[in-house]
Length: 234
Image (tube, one colour):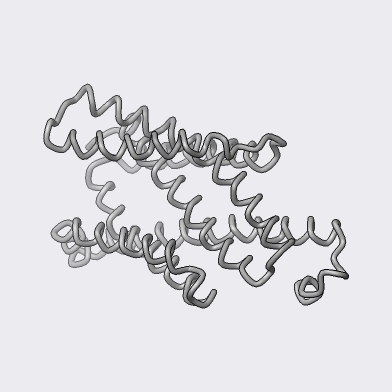
């Protein structure tokens, strides 16, 4: 079907719908693969004292590296091959797994498991809503972006203030923002893939990997904010 898409005269609405569904399934597939790589890397780090010590000692260096990878992938994805963008996404997932292994030192395994399950349930509900709704959720984009920027600023401020009240406000605010972002991003990804399939099939796989990264980040952040609220510390 993909080869036929190159010739616009042969495209049918049914074929477009089928390809959009296939590509969106691929987005979720890559997101799940990223989560699996993160989980596997976290477990490996926890069982490797040397790597765990490095993760703890150079945590901020790892975080800066992760931010750099997200920036590179987001800004340069259309200028690199699909294989390279996928490799960078998986490398980022592995790097994130190293830093996330540290939460097992702070929180009990049971609370991490339950919180992960809760985050996954919320993610599925919002993903289904974002995919099936007939409403264009793009109108909420600016509001969610402002909320996210505000969340980051307040979080940085509270590093210095160390306010318990602000800590809980940030935690609940983070949960609400990322719940909204999941529905918004799924809806946005669906629309972007539909446009790409209809107009330029060559960029669909790159749109898909950026979509997978966005959903991966939404889920991880939702999980972490839920863990701040419901996680039981050791």
